[in-house]
Length: 241
Ligand code: NAP
Image 1 (cartoon, helix red, strand yellow):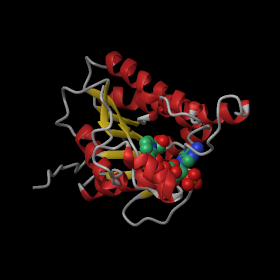
Image 2 (tube, rainbow, N blue to C red):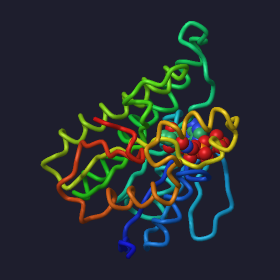
Image 3 (cartoon, protein in one colour):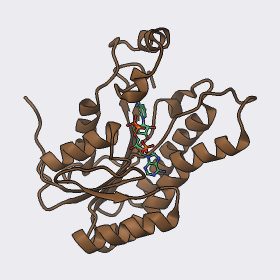
Protein backbone atom coordinates (compact mmCIF):
# COMPACT_ATOMS: atom_id res chain seq x y z
CA UNK A 1 0.00 0.00 0.00
CA UNK A 2 1.36 3.43 -0.90
CA UNK A 3 1.10 6.19 1.68
CA UNK A 4 -0.62 9.21 0.22
CA UNK A 5 -0.16 12.81 1.26
CA UNK A 6 -2.40 15.76 0.54
CA UNK A 7 -0.46 18.96 -0.09
CA UNK A 8 -3.44 20.87 -1.55
CA UNK A 9 -3.15 24.57 -0.73
CA UNK A 10 0.55 24.27 0.10
CA UNK A 11 3.33 26.07 -1.76
CA UNK A 12 6.70 24.35 -2.01
CA UNK A 13 10.10 25.57 -3.19
CA UNK A 14 12.56 22.95 -4.39
CA UNK A 15 16.10 24.16 -5.11
CA UNK A 16 17.99 22.28 -7.82
CA UNK A 17 14.72 20.72 -8.97
CA UNK A 18 15.40 20.77 -12.73
CA UNK A 19 16.81 17.26 -12.70
CA UNK A 20 17.93 14.33 -10.58
CA UNK A 21 16.63 13.95 -7.04
CA UNK A 22 15.16 17.46 -6.94
CA UNK A 23 13.11 16.81 -10.05
CA UNK A 24 11.58 13.67 -8.48
CA UNK A 25 10.81 15.62 -5.29
CA UNK A 26 9.13 18.38 -7.32
CA UNK A 27 7.08 15.82 -9.27
CA UNK A 28 5.94 13.96 -6.14
CA UNK A 29 4.95 17.20 -4.36
CA UNK A 30 3.11 18.33 -7.49
CA UNK A 31 1.30 15.00 -7.80
CA UNK A 32 0.27 15.30 -4.14
CA UNK A 33 -1.38 18.67 -4.83
CA UNK A 34 1.27 21.26 -3.91
CA UNK A 35 2.00 24.36 -5.98
CA UNK A 36 5.67 23.73 -6.75
CA UNK A 37 8.27 26.38 -7.54
CA UNK A 38 11.67 25.12 -8.66
CA UNK A 39 14.70 27.37 -8.17
CA UNK A 40 17.48 26.06 -10.40
CA UNK A 41 20.48 27.47 -12.20
CA UNK A 42 19.24 25.56 -15.23
CA UNK A 43 16.01 26.58 -16.94
CA UNK A 44 13.69 23.71 -17.81
CA UNK A 45 10.35 23.55 -19.49
CA UNK A 46 8.05 21.84 -16.99
CA UNK A 47 4.32 21.57 -17.17
CA UNK A 48 2.52 22.23 -13.86
CA UNK A 49 5.76 23.31 -12.16
CA UNK A 50 6.92 26.94 -11.96
CA UNK A 51 10.57 27.31 -12.91
CA UNK A 52 12.66 30.21 -11.58
CA UNK A 53 16.18 30.56 -12.87
CA UNK A 54 18.22 31.02 -9.70
CA UNK A 55 21.80 30.55 -8.59
CA UNK A 56 21.48 29.57 -4.94
CA UNK A 57 25.06 30.72 -4.27
CA UNK A 58 24.07 34.29 -5.13
CA UNK A 59 22.02 36.07 -2.41
CA UNK A 60 20.74 38.56 -5.02
CA UNK A 61 19.56 35.72 -7.29
CA UNK A 62 17.83 34.02 -4.33
CA UNK A 63 16.16 37.32 -3.40
CA UNK A 64 14.84 37.67 -6.97
CA UNK A 65 13.45 34.08 -7.05
CA UNK A 66 11.90 34.64 -3.63
CA UNK A 67 10.25 37.88 -4.79
CA UNK A 68 8.85 36.18 -7.92
CA UNK A 69 7.60 33.16 -5.96
CA UNK A 70 5.91 35.32 -3.32
CA UNK A 71 4.25 37.51 -5.92
CA UNK A 72 2.84 34.40 -7.65
CA UNK A 73 2.00 32.25 -4.61
CA UNK A 74 1.83 34.72 -1.71
CA UNK A 75 3.57 32.31 0.69
CA UNK A 76 6.06 29.45 1.04
CA UNK A 77 5.02 26.56 3.27
CA UNK A 78 7.70 24.06 2.29
CA UNK A 79 11.38 24.59 1.47
CA UNK A 80 13.46 21.73 0.09
CA UNK A 81 17.14 22.70 0.05
CA UNK A 82 18.25 20.13 -2.50
CA UNK A 83 20.69 21.94 -4.86
CA UNK A 84 24.23 20.69 -4.45
CA UNK A 85 27.20 19.30 -6.27
CA UNK A 86 29.75 16.61 -5.54
CA UNK A 87 31.71 17.05 -8.74
CA UNK A 88 35.51 16.83 -8.62
CA UNK A 89 37.24 14.04 -6.74
CA UNK A 90 40.62 15.11 -5.23
CA UNK A 91 42.67 14.30 -2.15
CA UNK A 92 43.02 17.10 0.41
CA UNK A 93 46.64 17.63 -0.68
CA UNK A 94 45.71 17.90 -4.35
CA UNK A 95 42.69 20.14 -3.78
CA UNK A 96 42.64 23.62 -5.25
CA UNK A 97 41.62 26.04 -2.43
CA UNK A 98 39.29 27.94 -4.77
CA UNK A 99 37.48 24.74 -5.82
CA UNK A 100 37.26 23.67 -2.16
CA UNK A 101 35.63 26.99 -1.22
CA UNK A 102 33.21 26.74 -4.18
CA UNK A 103 32.02 23.32 -2.99
CA UNK A 104 31.38 24.73 0.50
CA UNK A 105 29.48 27.59 -1.12
CA UNK A 106 27.17 25.45 -3.26
CA UNK A 107 26.61 22.69 -0.68
CA UNK A 108 26.51 24.61 2.63
CA UNK A 109 26.46 28.41 2.39
CA UNK A 110 23.60 28.29 -0.13
CA UNK A 111 21.48 26.28 2.34
CA UNK A 112 22.14 28.93 5.01
CA UNK A 113 21.34 31.79 2.68
CA UNK A 114 18.19 30.36 1.06
CA UNK A 115 16.84 29.37 4.49
CA UNK A 116 17.72 32.75 6.03
CA UNK A 117 15.81 34.55 3.26
CA UNK A 118 12.72 32.26 3.25
CA UNK A 119 12.37 31.83 7.02
CA UNK A 120 10.90 35.28 7.84
CA UNK A 121 7.87 34.43 5.64
CA UNK A 122 7.38 31.08 7.40
CA UNK A 123 7.69 32.83 10.78
CA UNK A 124 5.08 35.41 9.72
CA UNK A 125 2.73 32.58 8.68
CA UNK A 126 3.56 30.56 11.85
CA UNK A 127 4.07 27.47 9.68
CA UNK A 128 6.82 25.80 7.72
CA UNK A 129 8.54 22.58 6.79
CA UNK A 130 12.22 22.66 5.77
CA UNK A 131 14.02 19.60 4.41
CA UNK A 132 17.76 19.80 3.68
CA UNK A 133 19.55 17.30 1.44
CA UNK A 134 22.71 16.22 3.26
CA UNK A 135 24.62 13.02 2.42
CA UNK A 136 26.10 9.92 3.96
CA UNK A 137 29.40 11.61 3.04
CA UNK A 138 28.66 14.15 5.76
CA UNK A 139 28.38 11.35 8.34
CA UNK A 140 31.26 9.15 7.16
CA UNK A 141 33.73 11.56 5.51
CA UNK A 142 34.30 10.20 2.00
CA UNK A 143 37.94 10.00 0.89
CA UNK A 144 38.79 12.40 -1.96
CA UNK A 145 35.55 14.30 -1.35
CA UNK A 146 36.63 16.33 1.69
CA UNK A 147 34.95 19.62 0.75
CA UNK A 148 31.67 17.90 -0.13
CA UNK A 149 31.82 15.78 3.05
CA UNK A 150 32.63 18.82 5.22
CA UNK A 151 29.83 20.85 3.63
CA UNK A 152 27.27 18.06 4.13
CA UNK A 153 28.41 17.63 7.77
CA UNK A 154 27.77 21.38 8.04
CA UNK A 155 24.26 20.93 6.61
CA UNK A 156 23.58 18.30 9.27
CA UNK A 157 24.78 20.61 12.08
CA UNK A 158 22.88 23.59 10.63
CA UNK A 159 19.71 21.45 10.56
CA UNK A 160 20.18 20.46 14.21
CA UNK A 161 20.78 24.07 15.33
CA UNK A 162 17.84 25.51 13.40
CA UNK A 163 15.51 22.68 14.45
CA UNK A 164 16.19 23.54 18.09
CA UNK A 165 15.89 27.31 17.48
CA UNK A 166 12.41 26.81 16.00
CA UNK A 167 11.19 23.92 18.14
CA UNK A 168 8.53 26.04 19.87
CA UNK A 169 7.05 27.12 16.54
CA UNK A 170 5.18 25.05 13.93
CA UNK A 171 8.26 25.10 11.69
CA UNK A 172 10.03 21.75 11.42
CA UNK A 173 13.57 21.43 10.06
CA UNK A 174 15.07 18.07 9.13
CA UNK A 175 17.66 16.63 6.79
CA UNK A 176 18.23 13.41 4.89
CA UNK A 177 21.57 11.63 4.52
CA UNK A 178 21.29 9.50 1.38
CA UNK A 179 23.80 6.91 0.31
CA UNK A 180 24.20 6.40 -3.47
CA UNK A 181 21.03 7.26 -5.38
CA UNK A 182 20.44 6.15 -8.95
CA UNK A 183 20.98 9.44 -10.82
CA UNK A 184 23.09 10.51 -13.82
CA UNK A 185 26.09 10.85 -11.51
CA UNK A 186 25.98 7.15 -10.64
CA UNK A 187 25.49 6.15 -14.27
CA UNK A 188 28.75 7.97 -15.11
CA UNK A 189 30.83 5.81 -12.71
CA UNK A 190 33.05 3.05 -14.08
CA UNK A 191 31.64 -0.49 -13.57
CA UNK A 192 34.44 -1.15 -11.01
CA UNK A 193 33.69 2.00 -8.96
CA UNK A 194 29.98 1.23 -9.08
CA UNK A 195 30.57 -2.35 -7.92
CA UNK A 196 32.83 -1.15 -5.06
CA UNK A 197 30.19 1.33 -3.96
CA UNK A 198 27.31 -1.13 -4.07
CA UNK A 199 29.34 -3.77 -2.21
CA UNK A 200 29.12 -1.51 0.88
CA UNK A 201 25.32 -1.57 0.76
CA UNK A 202 23.50 -4.34 2.64
CA UNK A 203 20.74 -4.00 0.02
CA UNK A 204 23.36 -4.27 -2.78
CA UNK A 205 21.62 -1.56 -4.78
CA UNK A 206 21.42 2.22 -4.93
CA UNK A 207 18.32 4.04 -3.71
CA UNK A 208 15.93 5.40 -6.32
CA UNK A 209 14.91 9.05 -6.65
CA UNK A 210 11.30 8.00 -5.97
CA UNK A 211 12.23 6.29 -2.70
CA UNK A 212 14.03 9.44 -1.60
CA UNK A 213 11.15 11.70 -2.65
CA UNK A 214 8.78 9.66 -0.48
CA UNK A 215 10.95 10.35 2.60
CA UNK A 216 10.92 14.05 1.71
CA UNK A 217 7.12 14.02 1.46
CA UNK A 218 6.82 12.55 4.94
CA UNK A 219 9.14 15.23 6.39
CA UNK A 220 7.39 18.02 4.46
CA UNK A 221 3.90 16.98 5.56
CA UNK A 222 1.76 18.83 8.09
CA UNK A 223 1.48 15.54 9.99
CA UNK A 224 5.19 15.64 10.73
CA UNK A 225 4.88 17.40 14.05
CA UNK A 226 7.35 15.63 16.36
CA UNK A 227 10.44 15.29 14.17
CA UNK A 228 12.76 18.27 14.03
CA UNK A 229 16.53 18.85 13.94
CA UNK A 230 16.90 15.22 12.88
CA UNK A 231 18.95 13.35 10.28
CA UNK A 232 17.05 10.70 8.32
CA UNK A 233 19.05 7.83 6.93
CA UNK A 234 18.51 6.83 3.29
CA UNK A 235 21.40 4.43 2.79
CA UNK A 236 19.65 1.07 2.45
CA UNK A 237 21.03 -0.13 5.77
CA UNK A 238 24.65 0.99 5.27
CA UNK A 239 24.77 3.60 8.03
CA UNK A 240 25.27 1.97 11.44
CA UNK A 241 24.96 5.04 13.69
P1 NAP B 1 22.14 16.67 -9.81
O1 NAP B 1 21.58 15.62 -10.71
O2 NAP B 1 23.48 17.26 -10.12
O3 NAP B 1 21.06 17.83 -9.69
C1 NAP B 1 21.32 18.98 -8.94
C2 NAP B 1 20.53 20.13 -9.54
O4 NAP B 1 20.94 21.32 -8.82
C3 NAP B 1 20.83 20.37 -11.01
O5 NAP B 1 19.65 20.70 -11.72
C4 NAP B 1 21.81 21.51 -10.96
O6 NAP B 1 21.85 22.29 -12.14
C5 NAP B 1 21.26 22.31 -9.79
N1 NAP B 1 22.25 23.25 -9.29
C6 NAP B 1 23.60 23.09 -9.21
N2 NAP B 1 24.18 24.20 -8.76
C7 NAP B 1 23.17 25.10 -8.54
C8 NAP B 1 23.13 26.45 -8.10
N3 NAP B 1 24.24 27.10 -7.78
N4 NAP B 1 21.93 27.06 -7.99
C9 NAP B 1 20.80 26.41 -8.31
N5 NAP B 1 20.76 25.13 -8.75
C10 NAP B 1 21.94 24.49 -8.87
O7 NAP B 1 22.27 16.15 -8.31
P2 NAP B 1 21.46 14.99 -7.55
O8 NAP B 1 22.25 13.75 -7.66
O9 NAP B 1 20.03 15.00 -7.94
O10 NAP B 1 21.63 15.50 -6.04
C11 NAP B 1 20.67 16.36 -5.41
C12 NAP B 1 21.09 16.55 -3.95
O11 NAP B 1 21.22 15.28 -3.31
C13 NAP B 1 22.47 17.23 -3.81
O12 NAP B 1 22.44 18.09 -2.70
C14 NAP B 1 23.40 16.05 -3.57
O13 NAP B 1 24.57 16.45 -2.87
C15 NAP B 1 22.51 15.15 -2.73
N6 NAP B 1 22.91 13.73 -2.74
C16 NAP B 1 22.94 13.03 -3.92
C17 NAP B 1 23.31 11.67 -3.89
C18 NAP B 1 23.34 10.84 -5.15
O14 NAP B 1 23.77 9.68 -5.08
N7 NAP B 1 22.93 11.36 -6.29
C19 NAP B 1 23.66 11.07 -2.67
C20 NAP B 1 23.63 11.83 -1.51
C21 NAP B 1 23.24 13.16 -1.55
P3 NAP B 1 23.01 21.94 -13.24
O15 NAP B 1 22.64 20.61 -13.78
O16 NAP B 1 22.91 23.04 -14.24
O17 NAP B 1 24.32 21.94 -12.49
